[in-house]
Length: 196
Image 1 (cartoon, rainbow, N blue to C red):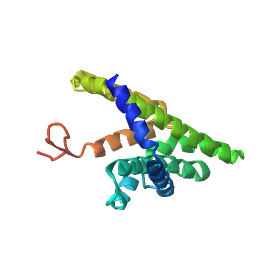
Image 2 (tube, rainbow, N blue to C red; image 1 turned 60 degrees about the vertical axis):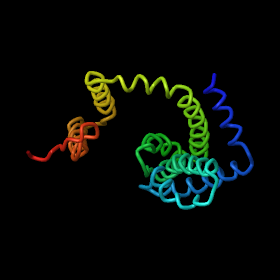
Image 3 (cartoon, helix red, strand yellow; image 1 turned 45 degrees about the vertical axis):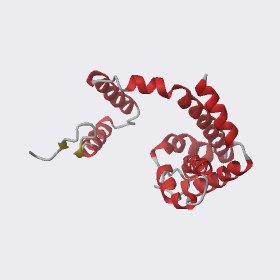
Image 4 (cartoon, rainbow, N blue to C red; image 1 turned 60 degrees about the horizontal axis):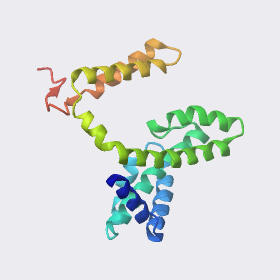
């Protein structure tokens, strides 16, 4: 019940007029930056970080959240209208939303993306707040068998959406996996692909 009270206290702080104004500014800037291809939400937050140098901490966190969620929605604009996803989160929006835009329903696709982004973001925030401690307790108990099954699930999921050429899709999958494994292991710090 303590988490629920903290969540309600956070919502009460967020709906003050000055914090809502910072959220509006953040959403507008985030949407404007999110429309640019290749600039995702994390880059948008990093680029606009200096704006909040003299701002209250709560307002700046709300501002950054607005930037993040605005950039997440902004990527769907180019995906729907131009079939050009700016980041990986907009891939499905590009596949389905652009079909709607081509059939003359671009406004409905953009409205659906905006409403869906708001509702899903709100639900995700509440769920993460309520269940993060339980998930974290479970996540630290994961070992090699669980990681193997997670990778197997990822490969199965990717193979389900490969398209017409399975060979080309699997080649791209394993080439990307090989490139992604270059460097230091994040857990052990051991160098990979060093040739030693």
